[in-house]
Length: 244
Image 1: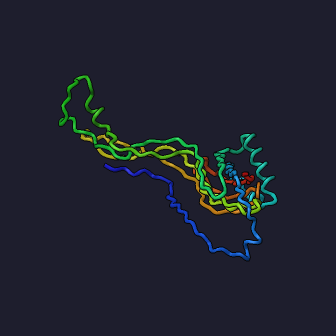
Image 2: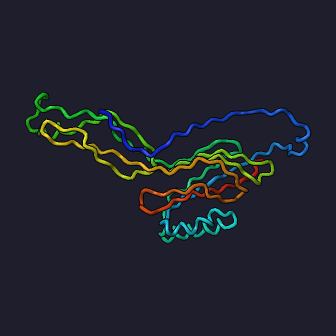
Image 3: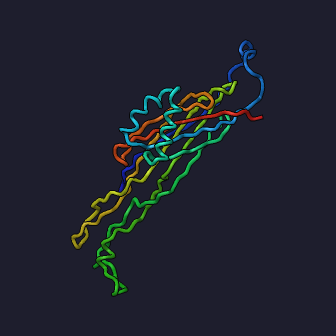
């Protein structure tokens, strides 16, 4: 018997290709000819807050000139336990190199079960056992694993001066909300057997953003399932430093 859990998830297919442009002498004279590379650090601050408190901050979080002050208010709210720090992944990588950081817990749960056996068709070698209590329980026969936690994947592209960064970013947070019970089968004794299946919630963003060196940018806003009436924001910040 196959049981399909309710999952909030998505599939992302990533591909990269390399293209060598023909030489352009007229533009080459205006470009830097050094072989300098850039080291890039990318942070994503994840904060959840009651929506009546966070909504007034959203205009400032979307304004490049006001976002730093708004983030300071968010961090102050976290310290005062008026907001929840849900994640703060960091990736250090090189210009043009795709890298990932994750902090996960592997949650294993059953997905297929063997129906309870009929006590009359099963030999009871131990009279001390209670066949009804044992046989009324379905036996898990297959399992799946879901990663819970925070993941950040980035691929930065730095301009020749090192003051602007284009970033391909995928950031997500997956949490276990709880379990749902389903009536799977009725046994010979007439009892309904319930199977518990996990409920997952995923906050995810897949985006391409451009920021200046050290600049912050709001890249996602999510309405959470739990706690109710909470909003969650993902705020990206990136820095470049030359590698000699």
